Length: 220
Image (cartoon, rainbow, N blue to C red; front, side, top):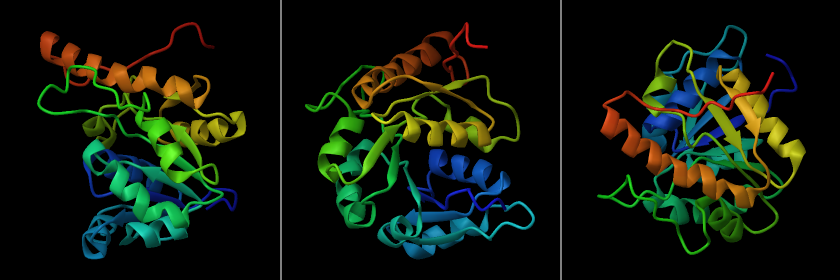
């Protein structure tokens, strides 16, 4: 495995989105640590991942221990758990990139845009973690079940963050998952992708399609 690939801690890595991303990154040669409230559940999920030959075997841990081990933290948790899990990992993520995939879906009307007081989950995460962590928002509009499949995904990843260098790190991760990362501006812009997720859910229902995504045209 290339020495410049950061260790990835997938918080919520037992869920469909988190495990799908973990599967693709493990296959690309990244060292993966699955985080869960239950270390046993995380370890079981890690055993399901196939690492690329020569790469370390994926492993599982509690959320806090996974966040401590990871150089880049990927948060793939439901909105209902978002604040609590951020508090669990806050002490472990100072100085690190935290990639927040969270969309503030409020059942049962998940096809209706319902944004938090901070205007987005990403800004809520940055506020809760403080400026010591560098929050980047991405992977909102990728159908989780498509990440699980061994097939290309016709979808771009909109990446939001206040530091272009941090966005570039996440763009590299998107490419490693066989997706195209698109720089989409500062963290404040993440509201657009979070809201768009509810729109896509509605489109899926109305047109009876299997996971509508986003493709940005005109980029070479």
